[in-house]
Length: 175
Image (cartoon, rainbow, N blue to C red; front, top):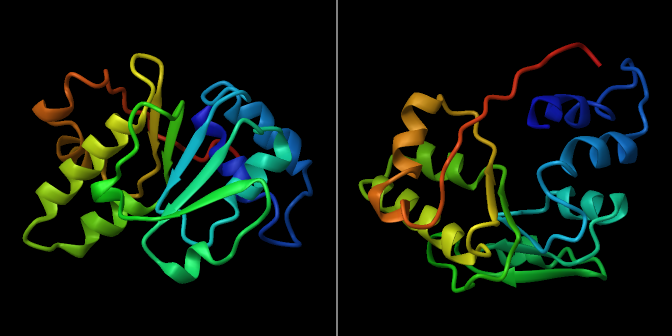
């Protein structure tokens, strides 16, 4: 589950840490939330290796990266789709089993622009519209305090799309 994200995140960062089988850890802890047959959208992917690692670990139904940076989407790998676009105004409709965000919400939240609430509501609505109804999952990793970010992501306008459930990831042990 999500509480083991740190085990994955830190597995290859330092030569001083214990080496673990990254592929096995990734498969074990993410497959509960995102089954292997899922079509996945990585929103605001940048040059992250998340999609590459998911593909290598067994998610082969389709992984799409979306970013507004032409440079980010120019770093392509066969078998992964890359789309130039803005997470606030995505045009996908009911086609993904999971939408994963690991920084787009935080980047918008920390920008403190006057339209912050509208931008985050648009991200939520775009993600909700991209998901397969009733079974799709929006997984948003945020370093922001839930009490601040949660009300901005869960609004009356997204109530018909999903039944949100926040989870906090904690480091459970040193890896």
